Image (cartoon, rainbow, N blue to C red):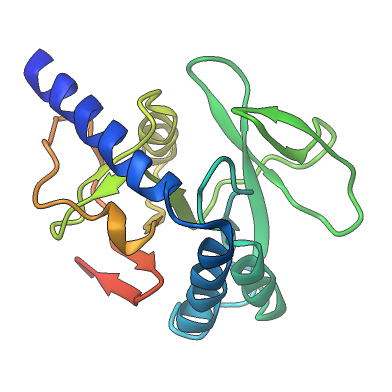
Length: 193
């Protein structure tokens, strides 16, 4: 198990370095392409609760995609770090004040409704063709998904990454949760239905 964690850390570091090297203008172009490519490809019913995220560091900026999904009737929320173990998903309402929410990002404050997402757009460091992902190492999403499943919820999981973050194989551990699909600048790649 230690070997897998060490290998994941090496892969994480390498893929994030490659992502960091993408010029900011190109990351923006890739992010806009993602919104175009997936905006209509994601099937959703009005009122579907979708968790997005505001970008940190060199992540894809999915705010244009989130705007398209909202225009199609989705209800949006963002992850908020409560402590080292827990994130919750707070509703992102028009005009609501944004506050520091942990991990270097901003989001809805404590007065916002806490929602259980039907679909999570998941940031990541690396992914493989089997739908396995490496996050940032804190395990927030794995634990949040486990809590949702304990409640009888089974949200769809779509990773958000650039093509350069794909690796041949992600070392899989028992607590890891596979993605249904990943969205990159090349489009939406489904792994399972």
